[in-house]
Image 1 (cartoon, rainbow, N blue to C red):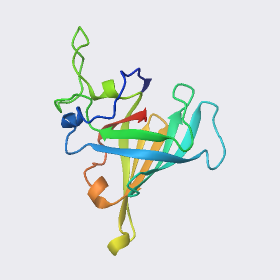
Image 2: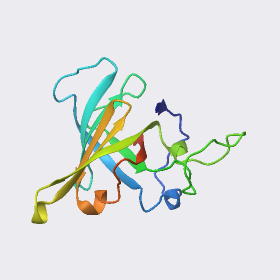
Image 3: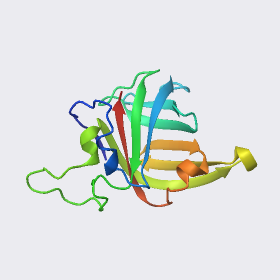
Length: 164
């Protein structure tokens, strides 16, 4: 599932940070490269990005026909197990559509399954690598165990993005 969402203006204030759960990952990423191995599909671009703190490396396929991506741009990225602000599993939204959701603050949302967790290196160089498939679009995240150990194999996750 991939959706383009219209968001009310994000002022950068953390007024909604209290909606995040311990298992959520929220970080700012800067796009370092677009399609480093050449563009293989008309509607999809592969991005290579690094978190501003520098501890996370990301390779992500984005449906750029509906959500254009720019090199050197800064994005807020959230990985979460649920869109519900109260932490409950995602289910039907109420009839009026007024149930608050994490997606209300983002522009691009994908949903998929974590299918691989790998360990790399040893000692101070030890890293975890997770891979999530969003219906064919792929995410690879590599970083410290303190950032990625919370993620579970075969669990569904949402990835949300917003250009800053």
